[in-house]
Image 1: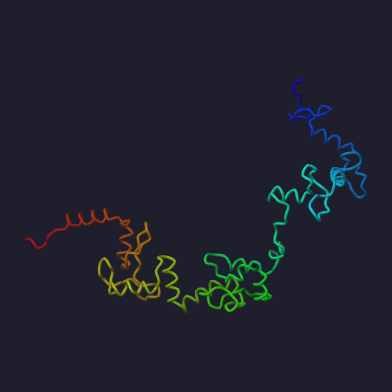
Image 2: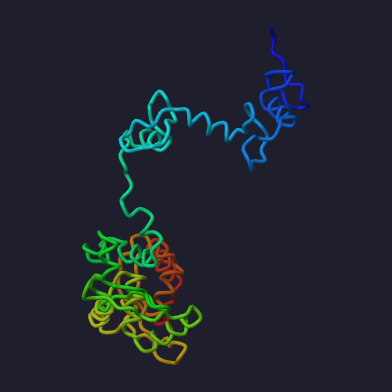
Amino acid sequence: MGYVECSSPSCGNPVFAAGLCRKHYEQARLETAAPCSISGCSNKAYRGELCATHYRAYINSTHPICTVAGCSNHQRSLSSGLCEKHLQRARKHSNTAQTRPSDWGARERHPLYKSWTWHKRGLPASMVPEWASDFWVFTTAVGVKPDGCTLRRLNPRQQLGPQNWEWKVSTSNKDKAAYARAWRNNNPDKARNSDLMKSYGITLGQYDAMHDAQDGRCAICGQLETAVGGDGAPRRMPVDHCHATGVVRGLLCTACNRALGLFKDSPEILENAVKYLAKSTVDTSKP
């Protein structure tokens, strides 16, 4: 017998019964089927007088009890002898033992769970091992989180632990920018040290040592910095570094630092510039 397509328009699937594919046959049958015989169920009968859901439940109830000790569920697979739960465990973990921790789900719903995961992240971890390894030891130690507060370290250079924590009132987002500006104004050295570390990987102490070694003068032109900032105060000499390797080379005045950038840090271009200047320079000492 040759291939026969479903009579439903634009279907193209093979015929299952009554000139229709399996999908359209079931749809047509359900349109004329009686309601499920289970009280309160509005679904159409799927097999006999039961809808698909109640039919599967009925079939499942006829199966023997799961072979796992202590389980009262019916077997999902007769060949395996396991219920749905233990069958999925066996497929995923190759055994039917409980793999979830006893407190599974309880930690994730706890108000302090996000604080715990935030502080124990990173390498090295910012939380002491006894807290990082046991969430419930951590919650017992810090107690209930006060409204509007966040957990902070008393000493930011040490790990969060039994002697190094506090609940600190949070700063609203709209006040954080103003707070940051005020902090930088009140702590200029710390702000400068932070900027140097982020941009060049050196501390303010290392910058000052380079400044003293150069006698406060530009490493190229040998002059003092003449540029001033927006407040009218003299600017600190910029840090010059290799853009390819990130290695700090020295301190330059603003003019020389910009000049190197315009010359693309290229020794070849700079040599050509020297040759150009030497060739075009007129010796005014001769008559």
